[in-house]
Every structure is written in structure tokens, then in C-alpha cells.
Image 1: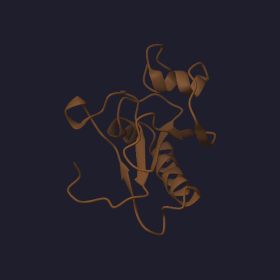
Image 2: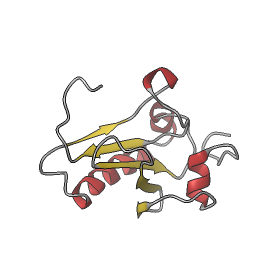
Image 3: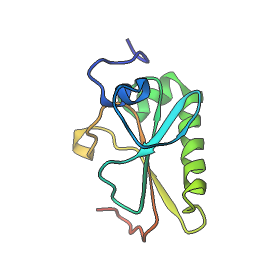
Image 4: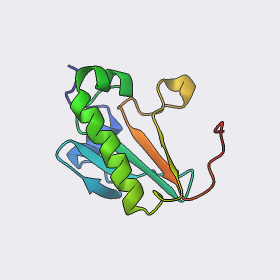
Length: 119
């Protein structure tokens, strides 16, 4: 069922505390933790506690939680001191876009120059 924890989801296991992660912030609706394969000096994932496979399905079902994820991304940027020089918030959707865990999540990336287009 949408929104319910999934037994085979890595991020649901992190939310439940059964898989370790370097958590940097938690709220009632979100958990933020360091990416295990960082692409920049600051690379933190912000996930909703609810399970939805991607950002679009989360936004359609839970717009307030989607706003919480974005607000927390901004808080992480400030906490990591990348907010003044610039940072990127990235939602990958689908395997072709690089999504490897199918639980909605935002990447907060900063601390180095970020060219456009990325890649």
C-alpha cells in the first residue's frame, strides 16, 4: 500500500533504524543522512518517512510531506554551510535517470563548483 513501509526497501529500513546511516537531521516526517557514495563534499539524502517510489508520486499523495522534504533540504544546506555559495537539490526518477533506491529522496549536493548540465 502506498505510504506504508516496504520490507525490501533500504530507505524504509533506515527510517525504522534496522539499517545504520549517518543521520544528520530528523523530523516527524523526514530523515536526512549522508550519502554512502558522495558526489561532492556535501551530499546528504533527505527522505520522507512514508514510502513512495519517487518524488512525483509523493507529491501527488502527500504534498505537505513533499514540502517538508524541500524545507529540510534547505535546512541541511544551511547546516552544512553551503547555502551561501550554492547547492543543488536533485530528485532522480527512474533507473534511466540514476535512481537506485525506489523510495522518494532528495539529494542535497554542494561544497564544490556545480556545472550545468550535470554529469
